[in-house]
Image 1 (cartoon, one colour):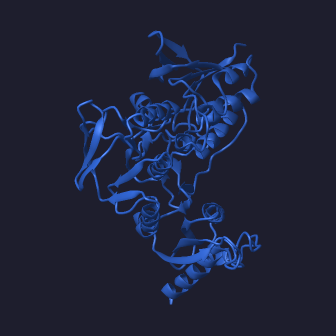
Image 2: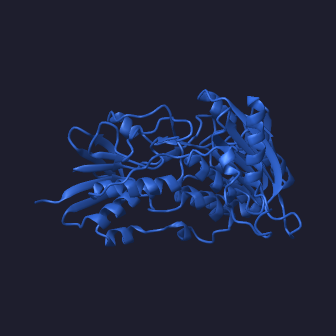
Image 3: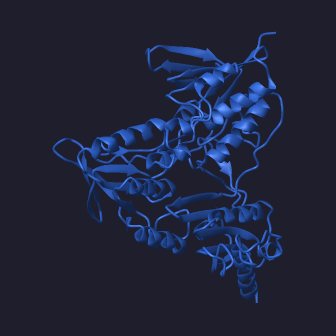
Length: 462
């Protein structure tokens, strides 16, 4: 019997995790694997790009987990610089373009994995394609930005404008600051880090100001202005104009699903492909999808959402590969956990923000506490702020946000587990968390926040 053929579109986290897991379960004589990647690199950490740009990560190759050659050694036919341009679902085949030779050809499949990732949001504004304006989605993007910064080094020009103040924006602001640039962050929202509630975002704003980063809120970019040499020179907004020698776009990403849409595959309200728990595309038995191109179930809100994170993508790939390879696995959903930092300030969130809770019709209470990451008397204790959101009457935990220093961010993992387990804030107060003065006060900050939230729930119900 001839081997089945698995075709994988996309050679990064989800796609190659799926291919590798399928290969572990089925040998080449039972499953032929063909993977297409339009870029120059595979299996790399896009999340690490800001730290490579800043110099914290020394070399580009440090971000690469597995090279094309290593994948090929595992009997995966990986075709680099080859883009899938058309998907013929009834004919069970894909059309590919070799970007080096210009050749196009069709490849049939028995099973298909779509892992096309996400694309950076790049507004169609005048000057947005000018030299000196950079996105940071891929390793190629990161290399182009570093080359641009090196060219500026000879001129002495050191003004960077970061457009957007989400995770990518604040991380790139830090990277530019570490490289000696004068940094301005333009944010059209009320506060930086729109993944937090505005009161917590204000803490991030204050900390960024203290680091020497100028943050301008309520500033929507209207155009990019260029100088006589054609390079970017200023960024114009509805709140003013800001000089720039380099512009970094940190506006966010959206699912890369044009190929799937054209083939008639189902997408959700956020533009991502819709799958079942096995990551199989809805109503298509032999097509799977994973990574940044899909929507996932929010276990707290009960709705799908789009979250572009490498952690999810790798898990999706493991699930897909297990199912394609004859095993069984599911991906039940997420609670929306994410962490970031700007210099020594750590930022974390999980679950719902206040506006998320309102959007799904939940009534809630909130509580915010100030604490420290270590016992107050222990040297090096630094402040952190924890905000907790719980459902009115039931006390079910809905979300947690943390801003602080000295290990603040990873405390959100306790809340993520509590959310996944459907715990109430009262139940959380009895959690047996680790304690010693160098690591925590007697009452961990998360438990202090839970106790205060219990009081808020009881008061609201009385």
